[in-house]
Amino acid sequence: MGLTRPWNDPFRDIERKLTQQPELFVVAECEGEILGTVMAGFEGHRGWMNYLAVSPAARGTGLGRRLVEHVEVALERVGCPKLSLQVRSSNAEVLKFYEHLGYGVDDVISMGKRLIAD
Image 1 (spheres, rainbow, N blue to C red):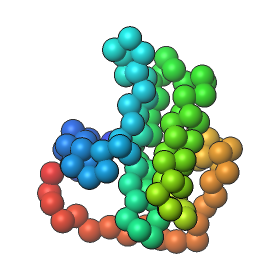
Image 2: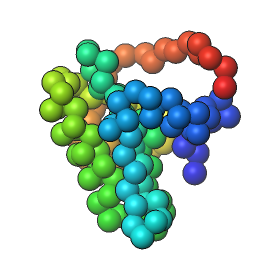
Image 3: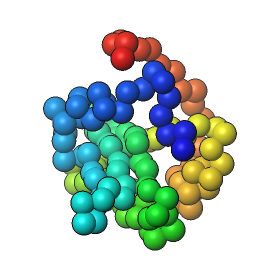
Image 4: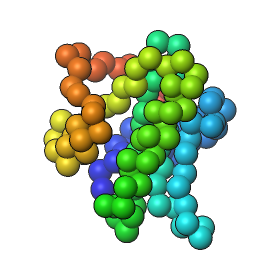
């Protein structure tokens, strides 16, 4: 599926998220089966959305759109003026998904520095 990379430990990320704005870690399930997830946060300047994923069985049902809308509403309620996200440039299908929801490419270069080696 290609959602994560070896240097990203989603289990550790979830543990960390549950200590900071846990209400912005959303899991969609049906009868105990996880169908989708999204993780978001707001640091005062803008919101960020990560780990949006929908199980193959639930794709095409609108679940991904509903998860994004849930995050957008929750962030807007706390005064978040802008929501940002990152998509790998090679992931054309996901880029089309976000463009369909009104997201556009920002003229920025994403930079990062690892503070804790997972």
